[in-house]
Length: 256
Image (cartoon, rainbow, N blue to C red; front, side, top):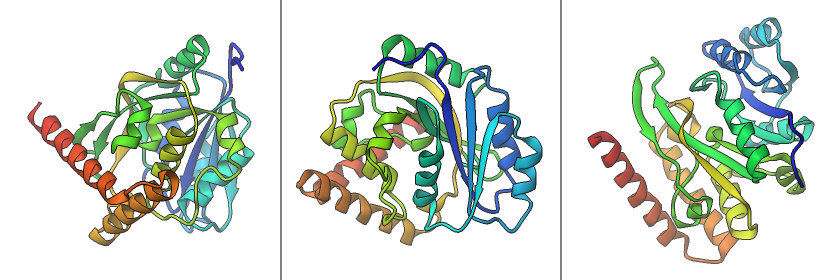
């Protein structure tokens, strides 16, 4: 199935007490040169002024849900369910696009190449907006089965694929449901993909996956279980490969 010439892009932002950074997130989307965007906010009943900032500043075609959820992946599923775009992506409440032309460039590749997935690289920043390092996504999507990962804000996907899965993220997972989804898609579907070899998102550290050693340990356990459940193969071997690849990538980024 081909895309329309001007496909709508659904950007889903999950938030909870995000008043510190949500304004920058909104500005980043508002300033995108591409016009056919809907910005969907799924809020977990924030107790600060997050909702006021969203209502006053988001001038894109926006939707807002504010209700209790079962975690970030449950909230992301809600966003997918109410989205109307041909292309879906996720932008965390404290993340921003690297420039004003990201969506324009991504859509151009979807339309001209008629692919299922488009993705790119990210830059990590800390809570004080200090640059930490670059993260390069794998050159081929199938490499997620070899221990690589694509940070979910840098991944854009044909909406039909997520909606066919009914619940695109396994909400029983707290840390690695996005990675489980990538493993599932790579293992079960012959998807066409294209990597844009540049930075698409400036991503802030401090999310749930790296808040503590316990969370990192839980993430590793979820990765092992996901890989074993989907492929029937040894998850420990897969995790070891993932850790080695991530460590080598960090060393290379620090050196160069």
